[in-house]
Amino acid sequence: MELGSALQFLDNKSILVTGGTGFLAKIFVEKILRVQPNVKKLYLLVRAADHKSAIHRLHHEIVGKDLFRNLKEKCGVNFSSFISQKITVIPGDLTHQDLGLHDSDLLQLLCKELDVLLNLAATTNFDERYDVALDLNTLGAKYVVDFAKKCAKLQVLVHVSTGERSGLIVENSYRMGETLNGVTGLDVNIEKQVVEDQLHLLRLQGASDKDITIAMKDLGIQRARLYGWPNTYVFTKAMGEMMVGELKDIIPAVIIRPTIITSTYKEPFPGWVEGIRTIDSLAVGYAKGKLTFFLGDLEAIVDVIPADMVVNAIIVAMIAEARHQQPQTIYQVGSSIRNPLRYSNLQDYGFRYFTKNPWINKDGKPVIVSKVTVMNSMDSFQRYMAFRYLLLLKGLELANAAFCHFFQGVYSNLNRKINWVMRLVDIYRPYLFFNATFDDLNTEKLRMTARTSLVENDMFYFDPKSIDWEDYFMNIHIPGIVKYIFK
Image 1 (cartoon, rainbow, N blue to C red):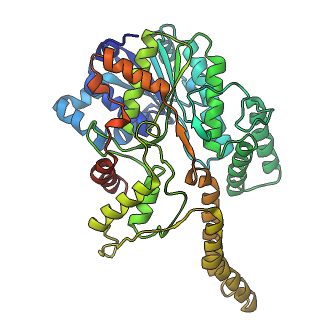
Image 2: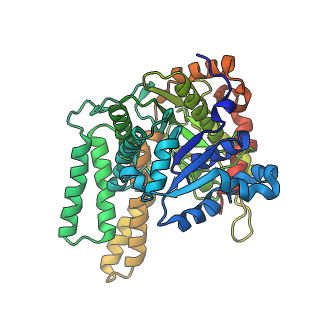
Image 3: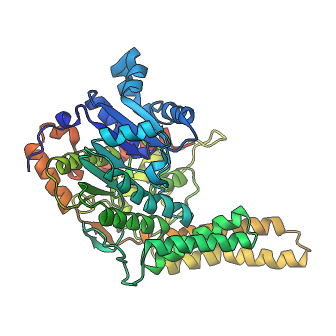
């Protein structure tokens, strides 16, 4: 398989990106505009009430970010006109037919002109409301495929997803109705009906918005675990993959499954990141002195991959599929097979970095960090919680009863915090004791093809073997999250 020139492929192409304000979408847009300014048009689908609101989001949430500083320097005074010429931002909604587009002329233009459709839209919250996650992650994928079928000259549909199994996670597609635990009966239409029935019942009961949100979150976890998935996010994304596989028909399509995405490794500069990602929440809590213990297996592999490598893999996979159409291919983009990283490494890097560069708290004092207490089983965690907090909570409950609810505020606050921690542990438990590696045989074949036949192979790097994890975390990633995430 020959890939040829990526820049030649991107020249004069029209590309639609859903989830246009997302982390990966911004990096994708910046990369394309920087390396191939002769791209014809980037259409960015964003949630917005109208075109004016969409333009505001473009300038404040996308091109206004520090991520675009190199491109701004390259373009100089022509930056704004270049952006206006190359980017068309579209107010839309992935949870509706035709992606929620109301402009019939624009809809007709897209169907006529689009060469590539990149679906990055998703809610990645593990504890999302089930109705929200089902609409966006599952039914949204259906609407994207339906729209792709209307595009007369579409060369490739790229759907970005996630992977979730135990053991060796292979690059296989999900069959419609397939489950992780073998339980039969999974049907997207039934799941949609379950949501509608539950919402109808809650409204009949006069439930508050808060109660409805809690009930929808609980329903998502229940339905996911019924079929073997640990949380609502990966369950609804898996069903989204099923929709793509079932409905795509003859559309050339690839599915990209990144693992935990971290800050940029090289481009447009090292260390750019946005939003608190999975492992970054641990770093923030630890540096600020709020994370005093860790629940999990320190020798477990944590599969991470820098964001610019994910974007490069997306672009190369896009080119490979467009030029050599094959049966639907899945590419898992991670590091656990080629260059494994362990939680013990993260613990060491965090301790060393924040010992040398302590966080200064709001009182102007450095936060002194120490090695955290590690609990390597749920039993040890439950004993710790019982000894440290639950006995205190029980004492407050008794005192509250004896003193006419004098301690009600303190009791309620502690009880709420304990329930919140226990819920988080319940949701994240599969990842804290995650015993799996992501096979990347297809991705490695793509890398090998790129090495031998992609003209600009060095420009579109995505080999995790090239990463020195110690250097990356100590000199790139942790400084990046301190700069862009810490408040």
